[in-house]
Length: 108
Image (cartoon, rainbow, N blue to C red; front, side):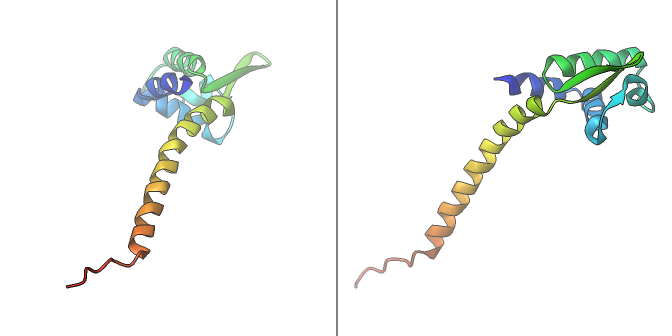
């Protein structure tokens, strides 16, 4: 269950902020760290945890590392969440169908 690691990782508020900064595309550690209330080395540790959870990938660009969201890891988490959505839609459909069915009246 890879989504468990992802959920545990994202339970940390700073890690969520780091992850959310990658929403717009690949960024270096320095750019991610800018404006956060933690040090650049701390951001690197958060990125390491996100990487281990399968949520981000990194690559070299010259002398720096650039991080971006791993679509495969995010896909695992999304598939798990979608199961809840599917169940909710099925329940909603059943309720609507019940409302469409005319009530059965008993003869006096």
